[in-house]
Length: 143
Image 1 (cartoon, helix red, strand yellow):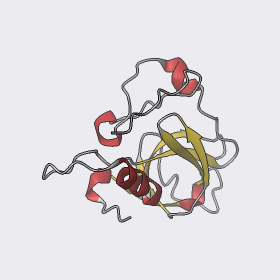
Image 2: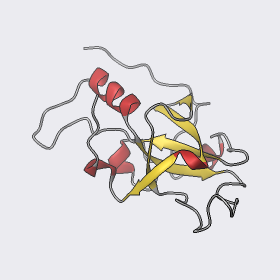
Image 3: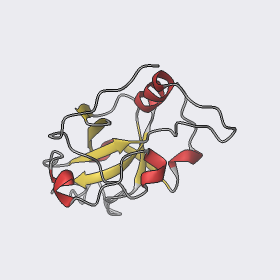
């Protein structure tokens, strides 16, 4: 059995609205979320959904299957939004498509990937959001 090395303490821990769904370590430290990059302009920082390690039927997923599922995921939670997100009244006459802490759907290869402790986050443009969902587990994550 392969053991994972413990990550350095300088990498940020992610604080999300529903920690049970994305499988990240629980942390009440607000300083940790400050280590994440601040999006500029019309960009937003999104944490891709991470599949549970165990299926509802009790099958334990391998690390490789979980990693492939996370990369292929098109669903994530909005962590931070840039100051100009959805400010263009001509493009968004009905207002913002999403807000912080919303679960959103985006294209598979959208945005820039940034590696962090525990996975990756993506920087997306505000117009790359396709939809919002209540629960990311309702979306089929094919890999």
